[in-house]
Each structure stands twice: as structure tokens, then as C-alpha cells.
Image 1 (cartoon, rainbow, N blue to C red):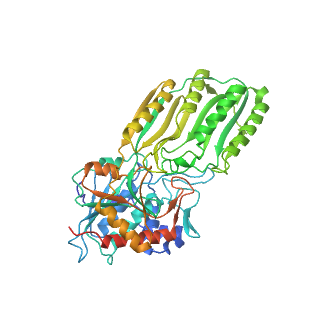
Image 2: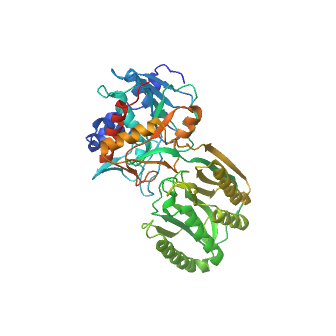
Image 3: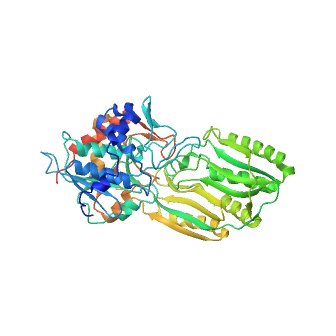
Length: 509
């Protein structure tokens, strides 16, 4: 990573009135405590920052560091590194890395009008929580990034020398962490601020690999008949790692179930399927354009109504808002061929989804899982994406092979992509002992020291920096990767107290 010269053009690509925009967008957020954290969070949330398109956020952070007069660099991948010297009296302490990711998951409700590429997140306070209006909030990992920004901008918080590392593309491929070179960081300890429960200290995580099937889907002219759109919505969704064990409905699987029954019983034909979305979110919505012989239209409506009641009964606890919609539509020009339709429905039906194995060593921890994230068949092509996670690399590969076997009958290609390693726990490391003791001292209770089934960048960073001690913590965030995402105000206050106290307790070099 090399320090780049200041660029008026790139810095200027971020609106100069970012803070004012954030204020007008949600003044109440600006008034929350701790003020510095929430104001930086509002500023950050005014900048669109989808995964793989974080250029504006990168420019925003680079400008932020340079305006503070701090050494600021951007590497070829887009990661931002800002260095701040130790405060007086802390120069004999070990240096630390404060790390968070810039990108956020973009999900919105179907009835929400919002453009993630041009609009800042619309936020509001609801009791002790901050939420967004029909979209993901970006607290994952925006609150962590905002806390780091607050420390960099502070002049009254004691801390050792800091390397603030802001990575890109954590949510859709970990390419920022994967692109980080091994000669950039010099610190001994890394504090990752991407955990979503304030009673937890995370010291390990799962690795993952994406399985992607792509190819052509043969089509044939549509026969006269009755056409409909069949859709599901109202599922809870959530994080495909942290929430995979909760048994929530997968919209892709449930839609496929309805399509399969309609085809089996009434000769339903498929023109197109558009189901699911982001690879790391449990699918909440799915839709298909279908036809049936006109004489069977009423029977189809009756079948779908019956099966909708079945699904609503099965998922009444986990997904009480589940809706199945069957609405008249224009007759399509073409359909998937009968042979390809049968292959597609069979492939999606047998594709593994959900928890494959729980950890035999850690009670309650998912060890291996797969999430069927995306099913698209339209305009002569298809693509299917699944995300396999596991704390055990051999199990990860085994389950990925099972997914490949399910999808290969579709033809085309099935590839493994975006693989990254897990993070092996080191429960006896000095930083784990320090943070555990500090939590007990500050809050009168023991933190849960554990590994998680989500992906964190620590495993990737650790591969290049094997001697770096790492730990992850953060405030309470619920509903991450869904429009229900929210962050708890009182928990952010606790998190801030914990973080600032930890900075002052870092060991001597």
C-alpha cells in the first residue's frame, strides 16, 4: 500500500455537504450519544456504498483522513489505511489495528422506492433502536467504521499508535481483505468491530465458498392459455450465516415447491423465474411468470391457495408475514422447454439448503451450512448462486461438491468462487484475556467468548499476518442483511465505553 497524493477530483466526488445532508435527512440521529459516533455514522450513511461499488465511500474516507492531517493511503484493491500516532503517555504501548468494512448489504422491501446508488439511507429513531425506512440500515459495519472515525478525529481519547484499516467488498466476496498485502500492517493487535452482540467476544469464524451455476436455458414458443405471476413475500430473511439455524423460510425453495406441485398436478409451465438476491442474505422474496391451460386456471388458483395455507401454517412462528400471491399477467412469448423446466425444478428441489452439521465441539454453533441465495432463469440464460459456509475446510468443500452435483444436470458450468478461509480461535491469547477481564470490570458480567458461523475478515488477514492477535466485538445489531436491520442506541453507548477503555489498556511493547 502506497500513500497517494491528495486528489481534488476524487475527493470532490463525495458531496461537500455530506454532513449537512445527513442532518437534514435525520436530525434526531445527530443528537444521539455518543455524539461523535452517531454523527460520523450519519455522514457515512449519506454516501452510497454498495459492495464492489464503494468508490465514493473510499474517496470519503480518504478525504476524511487527509483533512485530519493523518497519513492516509489507498491500496490497489480500494482499502483505506489511516495512521494516527499514539497520544502522549501511550507511546510505549503496542500498536493496534482498528478494522471495519466500508460496504453494506443492499436490501429493500418490494414496496419501498429507493435507489441505493444515488440515495443516502433514510434513518429514524424507534425507542432504543435506530432503523431505516424500508431498507437495510448499514449498521453492519457502518457503526464500527463510525467508531473508528470518531477515535481518529478525537483529541481527548488516550490510545496507542493506530492503523485504521477500512476494507472494501466484505459482504460479497471479501476481496478487500484478500487483496491486502502482507507488508502493510505493523501493529501487534487487531480489533475488528464487526460483531453484532455486545455480550460477545468473537475469536473465530467460518470460511466460505460460493457455488455459481450459469448457462443457457432452452426456450420454446408459448401456447395459448392463462398467464400469471406467482410470488412470495413477507419472509423475515436475515444473515445467511448468523441466522441460518433459525429455520426461516427460503423464498427460492418455497417458490420452487409451489412451481413443482403446479407442474406435477396441472401442467404448469414456466416462462421466467426471478428469485432471491444477494449471496449472503436468506432470500425473502421470489417471483415467477407462469402459464397453464385456460381450462385449469381455476384449479391452479385453488391449488395455490391451499398450498399457501400449508406454508403459512408451517412457517407461522419463523415467518408470520409470509404471503403467496397469484396474479393475472400477460401471456409470455416463450417458455422454458419442458425438459429444462423439469431439470430446473429438480435441481432447486434437491439443492442442499440450511444447516448441514452443528459443531460437535461448541454447543449451539453451526459448523457447516449452505444458503440457496439466487435463482434466475430468464431471456435464454440461467444463474444459480449458493453460499457454503463451514468452520472446517474439508466439510466446506464436501458440501460445495454436493451442491455442484445438484446443479450440474442443468448443463452450463458450475464453478467455485470467492473462497476464503476461516479464522482459527486462539482463546488463550493475551488480547482475549485482556478484553474478557475488561468486560467483567466494566459491566460486572462475563462476555461470551465464542466463534461464529458468519464470515469475518480476520481469517484472511491472519493468513498474511500469522502473529497478529485478533478479536472482534461490537454493539447489538439485529436483522442484518434485511430491511429489518436495526442497531440499539444503549448498546452503542456500551460498545463505545468498552472500545475507548480498551484503547487505554493496551499492553506495553
